[in-house]
Structure formats: C-alpha cells, structure tokens
Amino acid sequence: MIKNKLIQRISPYLKEWGDTGEDISLMNLTGGSINKSYRVKTKQNTYFMKVQEQTRHHFFTSETKGLKALRETEAIKVPDVYFCHDTEKEGTPSILITEWIKEVKGKDSERRLGENLAKLHSCSLQESYGLDYDNYIGTLNQENGWHNSWSDYYINKRIKPQLQLGVKLKTIHGRRHENLLKLMDDMKQWIPSQPEVSLLHGDLWGGNWMSDSKGEPVLIDPAILFGHSEMDLAFTELFGGYSPSFYKAYTYYRPLGQDYEDRKELYQLFYLLVHLNIFGEGYGSSVDRILLRFQS
View 1: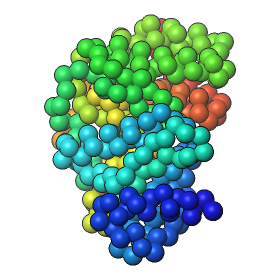
View 2: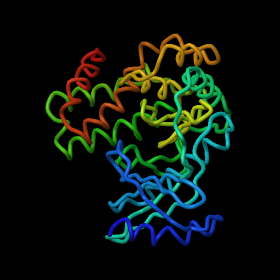
View 3: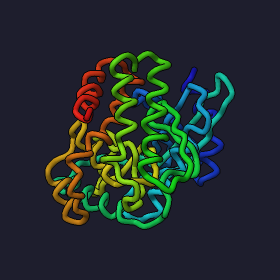
C-alpha cells in the first residue's frame, strides 16, 4: 500500500522530466537510519529515492541546495537531483529523487577522492564563514548565518547548540557540562579566527561518498558550510574508512597546517557531540576524553 501511494505520487513528476513513468517498481534499500531509501525502476531509467516520514522543515530542500553548491564548483561529482518535495503535512512524507549511481569501487577511487576534495577546498567562493540558510546534520537542525570569525561561528553555531541540546536531552551534565563550558571559553587558543574559507561537505564520514561505474568519486548527503577545510579532514579520521592513498593525494595538493594534529580533535568533538545527542552514551567516553585533554 505504501509503495503504491509513492508510485502514484511520483509518477507525474517522472513524466515531467521526460520519463514515460511506465512500469514503475520500487525496491527497498538498506543502509540508512534517517530515511527510507528505494531504487525506483521504470521502463526507461533507474533512480534513487529517499523518503522522510517525519515533519522536518526544508529537510530535503537544504540537501538539494548543498548538492547544487558542490556541483557548481566542478571540483567533485555529486548526483543530479530530479525531484525534491518537502511537506509539513502530517502523514505525507517528504521525497527526494536523484540520479542512480551504480557503485563500483575502483582501485584508484580513493586517490581521486583525495585529489578532488583538495580541489573543492581550494575553491574561493566566499569571504565569510557559515551559510545563508539553515540545514541538517543527521536529524538535527543546524542554524547558520554569516560570520566574520571562523572561531566565533564554530563555537556559537556548532558546539554551543549541541551543548544546549545535550543539556535538554540529559546527555550532557555534571563534570562533562562543566568541562565543555570551560573548553568553549578557551577554544580560541586552538581554533583560528581567519583561516582560508573553503566549501565543506560537512558530514564526510566514510558512508557519504561512493564511486560510480567509471571509478569517479561521488559525494552524497552533504551538510555544507563555508569554513576551515580541516573540519572535513578531521571527521574522515574519526571513524576510519579512508585509506592512506586518500590522505596522500589530498595533502599533495593541499598540505595541512602545522597545528592540525593539535586541533583536529576539537573538530572531531562536534561530530561526537552530534552522535552523543542522536545515539546516546556510547559516544560519551570519547567526548570526555577530548574534554579532559584540553583542560588547562
């Protein structure tokens, strides 16, 4: 029944972009915890579709804007978006339909990913830090806006909202709360105020890239912002999944700053706080370890 309703809903839009919309079939895909995912197959083509059943303001719209911004740099491939519709009506899911990427991991894909990510980070597109619209990291809303100082933006628009949410969810309390407040006061010792402004993917764990049938790396599920390129790199190191060839290629084209090793855990802290607030205490010890390391 659910699949039939989805087919009826997307059929007119398939026809709008030149697909006859005949013989539509949906196949459930695994791997995502936030959305339901489907392979949409018609007589003419194959597409990827995500369905969000919770009412989240502009959820797929912000993702579509992020993909568009990445695509316009011409530095790295992202899927084409065919249809995006967010709804705030209860019982009516939001839908995003994109190009189907037939994934084939080529032996050279990670090297090319490192090279292309370095090119992305080297695109000079903005003088300010942040973004002109709000977006999401996982299921969590992120407020943005433009800032003249990267450290101010990072502390007030990334770390502070996670602290406030953690207090509300009771994932941050007691000594953890005290240590995080103190670190926020001291953080400008390590986080630069005026690094080069780069367009960041914003959520670059190992599951948010793939390679197409030609081995070309493709970025998916962005949470973009304009900021310090080291933030993307730090997240790639947090949970693993990237080979030495990726880092070798990236640093060949874009060497890391001398202080990167000293501050990368402060960028990883944000992602650990996000995971703590979404998934719970399993990430608490990693948060606490970083907080203790930076206590002066």
